[in-house]
Length: 547
Image 1 (tube, rainbow, N blue to C red):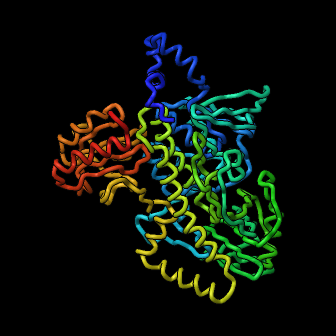
Image 2 (cartoon, helix red, strand yellow):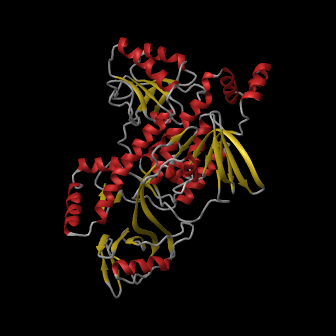
């Protein structure tokens, strides 16, 4: 299955990076290509043009790979889903130079850093540097931005093209498609299922998807209020004929109600949770009347509502695919995991895409070391398990109705008034506390973590780690003028960019950073060359193949 073991395929992989070499192919090579290798319509087929699929397609293009995105829906859906983007993916977008573009597209002001967590709140408003951030970017707008980005990079996105069958062998994946002009077939080296919670790719591949479905329906809305409803200075709502509804969460024996607003604003966010067994069609949008009926059932209040700016309904499931890879077929996003809490699914799915893209590209270009693609499952399944941990904890916090559950929530909220546990919870929810397992007996403490955005000074001026990662290429960053380590990396210079710079309070002498911004290896400050050189050579070979 490893392409770099085949000289013919290695030569063909080189053509993808330099089409001008086509004339150099020998006649035996051309014959081998025609007779032994399937003709590839794309390098990677991506099923699903949601945020995960589009992010994966863009990352693959940056790595010089040809993706083909197949989307069943004929156009981008307008049904409201996620209302914003938050967590570590915002840092990754900044490292790609995209965050300012996404921020500029937001029409709503960035809210104060205060996030729901299982019926209580993580309140970072008193911290100068909150560990968790959110961007009020509705999913419809997010998908439009990612679609535009994919188009700029030359990605082939086919909407209204439904995948109806998938098969694979040792050489390729074959996909049968029903398109607007009739059925057709495409072949690629790999296929990635980014086709959501009801993933047919996952079902066809036979990957188990165990977990729990919770019997609750969540309704989330952003609405204007008529002048008859007064928003008090503390955010409480004074409703005529009912009285005051306090800001935050109100628990009744019929469910949970939440509301939040800014002082002086008539725009509020409303939230209800009820236990229901009703099966809702995700493509049928929620209405204002449905929201008001839910508020009435939970709170016993007839809440007047003006214009609906956002209405969404969802259920909670805790499920994770048993494996993220089956041969040449892989899973990402909701096809791989479903979490029983809001605000984490987009973060996890788009980070799956960034982790996977460069590893697929390495295999397709022919230089991936043995086992590299398998680290996708090892690393992102670990991250998914970590996200499942805190989202299941949120289920326990919010679903308890007795006095013991109330006491648990009160104690938990009290703990979050201290900075250290508050920061720890923020990093957990953001996905910023992940440390991927690294090879070796005692890897550097930074190995496996997200690279810090150091301010760098060099002969070319001032820059940063984030700036260096805009092209999505691996970098060797020498912070201590270690020529012997730069010389060691020269053999990999076609795959790894080498930079020399200085920074205040350097965390290590040298950092080897992967395209997904995670640190693959680091040399400790003043580490002897006799130790550092062979360790760096091993890390370069282990992550970026034989030079």
